[in-house]
Image (cartoon, rainbow, N blue to C red):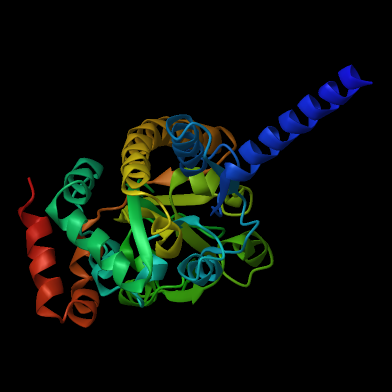
Length: 325
């Protein structure tokens, strides 16, 4: 009887220790609108693996991809209020909330992807990152979203004139609405998840995005004409609720920052591969890809810059970006 009692006691102690270990783990919820396997999704997974390993399992990241927690604009408030802990979201939907995010969202602000990396990895990127804290967010990393270009279901876009009167879905951002208007077309802001059916039913003629999104969202099935005008290279923001961040010890904050930085290298590597893969896939499926002369597109952007870069601080940021070699 005594032996049984000891065994029972040991079992209860083991169970209590296991329960204690389980309760010690904090699970952080993270959102992404892109599907599983997408470079940003895989980068956040990698971030989670590093955090879990380096905190000895005290923290884990539970990733909800494919807009399971809502479209990008919906999840901004969720992460600001701490309903979700982490969020990967395009910079553009932040434009009305954080003025500094306006500048990297401007059309043709970056000369190339390499130029964008140098800017976002440097002093301008630090300045933009600091601005996120004013709205209850901590910027952990900038990810790539490649170059966005127009695609449609009607015809090839070989020149600026071909855009006249066409209807394009854009991100829910005033800059994108004004950019499309400056090019002579009509902008229709709508959530990413509604684009396929809107093109299919003729509500819009097309949209604008990078090759991986054009491919993975299956927009290439309903919009076969892709034009490489490459009007924007808007970085993605990987953010954390400040309320969640403030619960971390300084040591754990350093772990999170380092893990996020390492996830950037992983995301860029995956991104480059995904762009090649997606372009090859849509071409094989019959998409027609054209490359118009970009200069007329660039020349048309004057009114967009005049409207959205009025503040002296933003003007200085534009000049700082131009100066980066």
